[in-house]
Length: 234
Image (cartoon, rainbow, N blue to C red):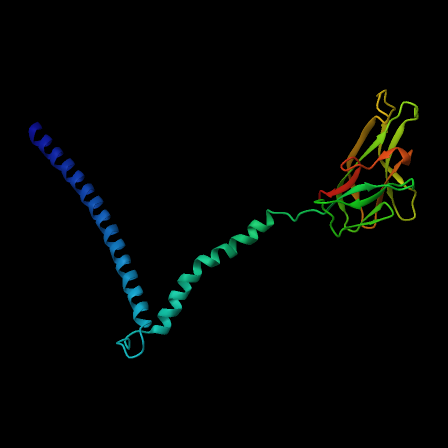
């Protein structure tokens, strides 16, 4: 009796294994047949497109060439439509470049330092430069910076100050930045030193910024020594 039950169990297990293997084989075969049918349909479609391109008079009466041409054109245009859907998303993640300006110092006898455009430096239309004062036409958050190189002779013991002001309509000038330099013990006839100041500031449209120094005669205007600029952060 036990032997008979063992035979039955083995037979059932063999049947189950055989059934699973057969289903798996059938599934693979159906996938292969589907791919072959797809390739065959593609071949037939391309063959019809080729026949439609033949000169009139050939045996193309059974083909609806207009419909086939439209279908073929839609298939060719599809890859070009995908980027059009992606571009807007890419543009939202790529913020517009902020305005900026960088100017070099130019010799003047006024207390307010004057500036000029310099090679390879940005100068956007959001800024205007008049009599040393930079006016902003776009409100936003800006990084404002300035460097002034000056002569620190030992006999000139008075400190040299660099002051960046914000000029508002109908208001007194507001001090934004201040840098202080002292005299040097250098044996040089001049003993050049540089003062750099910078900070972020919120500016409204129409605001004006400018740079003052305590002694304009001590400023050095050699290339790269004295400059002034703004960069829009947001």
